[in-house]
Length: 344
Image (tube, rainbow, N blue to C red; front, side, top):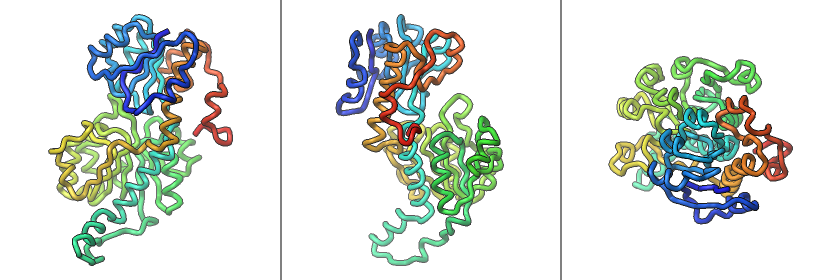
């Protein structure tokens, strides 16, 4: 069986090789950038591991034997899910990796913005020692944070900001009211969130329905002087409307780990804006989370090709109705990443 890694950004593939070291598996490694390169590399693949290379409908229709495509990380926006589902190809991801890392990073950006750390640092280094220049700064326990989306990461972030005394409101059309109650957060509409939040942290995945979901209308609803953090995907926020809101003062400042097109163009307006903090899509990274994510991505391949099971982290769950594979059963390989019986 052939397993193809379409592309990666790691100095070595130690973790992937360790997981995929099964008799009968041949690993091929590529650095594809275009559809044509993916088609050439993957046409006869039984399993595919993907990072950024496009797995479009055209690519999927060219696959002759593929049973499983797994993607490094949480988002699967590089893969045409509808096309994969139509062809009976399982799509897997790693939704539970880096939960602490991303929530920590979002919190770090929130705190940095609210306490005006970069501005204060620069004024002191410019030989200006004047606390009045930082005003106004609000007390954290008087503020409301709005979480757009309420998956694993924002759930963990909610726990952390509540310790600081912040009120938490959540907008997620798929979230049952009882889950919101269990986490002691207020479930509201997106409009109500925008109207009430002093800080908005974006955690929605990028799909056709979420692209640009924070746009002109949403910025019109927001309080003047709101702070926005995005550690999800850049295109969830309409960048043109975002720039306008930053320039007219609707948004006081922003902390962005993601932008619409990555890496960011050096001429992008964000680069020269003092009220925008940028990090290079690093929120999910730690040495520990990297090992977890890369190993679990490869384990999804093994679930299907070696054990004949649906992958633990199956994205297109409707395929389970076809019963092409057995239900997933927990194995020791996965238990390595468990703490107190719960997945990290």
